Amino acid sequence: MNDIQDSLDIRRRLRWVIWWRVMFLVVMATSTASLDTLFQSINSRGIYTAILVGILFSLVSWFALFTKASDQITKMLATAQLLADALLASYITYVTGGLQSAFILIYGLNILTGSILLFTTGAIVAALLSVFSFAGVAFVGLGSNLFHDGHSVVRLVFVCCSLILVGGMVALLFKNRQELISSLRRTRQDLKGLTELQIAIVDHIPSGVLLVSPNKYVLYCNELARSILGVPVLGQSLVNLKVEQFLFQGLAELSYQNKSGQNLTLRYQTIALDENQSLIVFEDITNVRALEDQVRLKQRLASIGHLAAGLAHEIKNPLASLSGSIQLLKKKEELSESELKLMSIVLRETDRLDSLLQNFLDYAKPSRLDLKNIAVRSLIEPIVGLCKNDLTQSEKQIEFDMDIPQDLHCVLDAQKMKQIFWNLIRNAVSSIERAGKVKISAYLKVNQNEEILRFEVQDSGKGMDEETQTRAFEPFFTNKSDGTGLGLALVYQIIQVHEGTIGIESGLGEGSLFWIELRKAGPKVKTVTMDGVAA
Image (tube, rainbow, N blue to C red):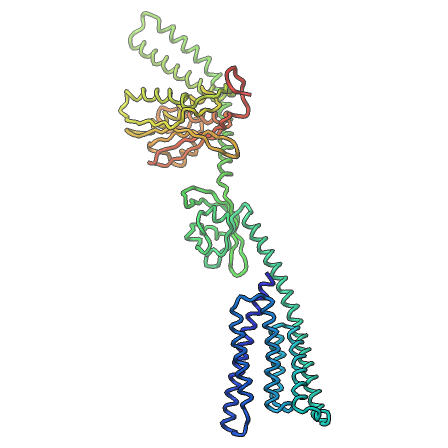
């Protein structure tokens, strides 16, 4: 990378040197022409020749820069500039008076040009070329008479020493410059490496990071921030992103709906920086909150389950005695019709209470699974058939759609899963007021190299609000006038025993979708059966 940069730098410096040489020669030609006009005695033909040769050489060098020359050829071209400048300066010095010429200062410009092109080396080379060139001009101009004129010898030695001194000073100056450039390059490389490391770390931390300007615009964001917010947030306003609450400093939470319509819970912290900028660090804790809700739900279910078991055992025996006593009284012949009717009501309600208590016991007692490898479609088809028969006496017009492959199997407890689908399909039917559709589907997916069977029961009913979805699996929670609120609680418990997950996707007026995910190979804790696959 440094070699490429050096090549680009020397080409750029060459262009500047050639440009300024041409400008100098043009100014020199203009000045010579003006002097010719004022003083006809000046012999300027040699100066014009030098200027013309210098301009032609500059043009050739300029076009050579646009060829695809190698770095070595470029450096040779730069060295050629030093030699050409020395010859050009010597010729101009020679034709304008030799040792006594006023253009001796051009050699100093050559040393500066050499230092610009090749730094320390260029300054030393240009100084040596200038010394030898000027000495050559002196010998050519005076010959052997040079050593017979003390004034000329002193002038020659003085000019040569001055050129060497200037070359040394410029070389020392550019040596320090080169060391500074090398140090800056190393620092830049270190900073670049640190910046890349910082970006890599920030892009891979499990939190979104935003750098916000004083006018609420995003100056920087990492990959996770773009992923969570669902849009390319760089350069956008927090107001447009609907996260202007991020500006409130401190640790807080924010409910956010991303571009795909998913509701997220974001926990963020805003830190004030210099220049009124703000650093915002946030994370998606939606799953954490969902797990917390599940834990709280399990705790409530466990406590209510213990209470239900105790109540069931305490009430069931007196209820059986009450039912038996009423049945004995009903056999008496002297009872009136109204008394018989009242006893029938008592018996019907005691049966209803007994059924409710049995549900309590089913919910409260530990579940043992009888696992078998079951064809899923054969498990659900009879339940759909029963629901269709129930609807023959109803005014509802409901279409059932089953999207379940015939060869789809799963290890599960058939009786308990029938209870689940009976509850879910009946709930789907009850949510439809007049006409609609209930779709039951099942398919396999892979999650972390494990086959997962996903069931879906979707209806076109009235849907549920957020509170109903949150409390749907709580015992005794129901929106039905004749419901007990235990159906979905039992469903949830059975799914937990199967080591699966269950969820709801719904909205008011949009219908509901209940989904269940189970391992195709069954739960890890299995009960051995004679004809099953348990192990």
